[in-house]
Length: 88
Image (cartoon, rainbow, N blue to C red; front, side, top):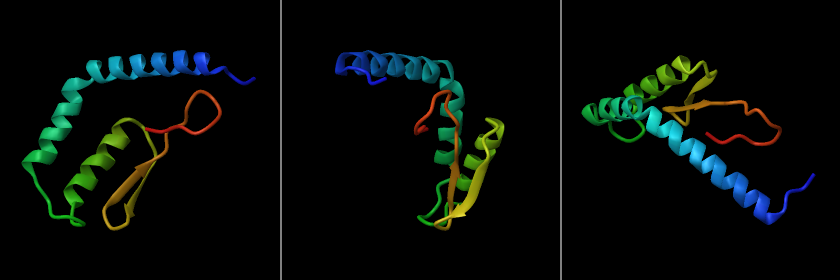
């Protein structure tokens, strides 16, 4: 069933609220990761430490990840509770 524009707006606002609440709840974890990256700067395309850290965080979140994409890229796929694309 298709949603009306107003229904999509309500769903979008609810999603924004839920994401913001989750970020607030995990702010210490997020800041700790950012601090680790900040304290160990790396040159472009040589971010091996950062890639390792991101991989560790994906593992901690139980997300299956792929490493070595475009030199130092790391990617994980998170399955959503509903059909369709999931962006994280």
